[in-house]
Length: 273
Image (cartoon, rainbow, N blue to C red; front, side, top):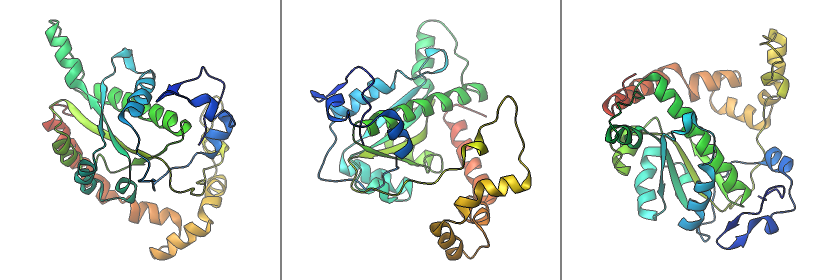
């Protein structure tokens, strides 16, 4: 992927990135971005490069400029292998140059407050919500910067499933909880661009416009009728894609079980909800 040329040039590893990636404009980047799950294991990504991109990402907006987040960079192959089971050994983690675990970090903020004779009040639902939002913005800012610098990224949706296992592997103290994991590396594939709902399905002008049943079915019709979706439906023995999502991929029973596990983990980490 390439970097747009409308900003002041950034230098990573003494390379003027804007000179290398000045053929793609910002619109083309956003409309053609892809999630990358297969990485070129022969091309490492230096910690210097990762740190510079993370430094840039840390300028993202956040609540009160408190920056109640941290990121653990796992780059050693044996350490990545140790994390893989917590993410169900997904292919995206196998050849990644690095695995980044983005965490809510109240530990740093709370200790700073107490060292200054102030009692913090973030270990609750409101603080947790702020933390999730701010950590997510930080993670997405990093992904955008990484992709614009020629790297590929993939979000792993398994972080909250096995948060305790991840916390143990990364030695997370109390008041620190993992919420997002991103794999990164140089792409070794060019996957198809994933379909998205039409913009009219997600944008509402002035007030929420509840679609009719027909309009709603039309919104999903392209996704429903993709060859990959039809195959997915057939493989799972279902009648349609909605049944695959609701009954196979993300069933209520699993969601409620993982909710109980994650809530208990949060409580043990000092964030009771």
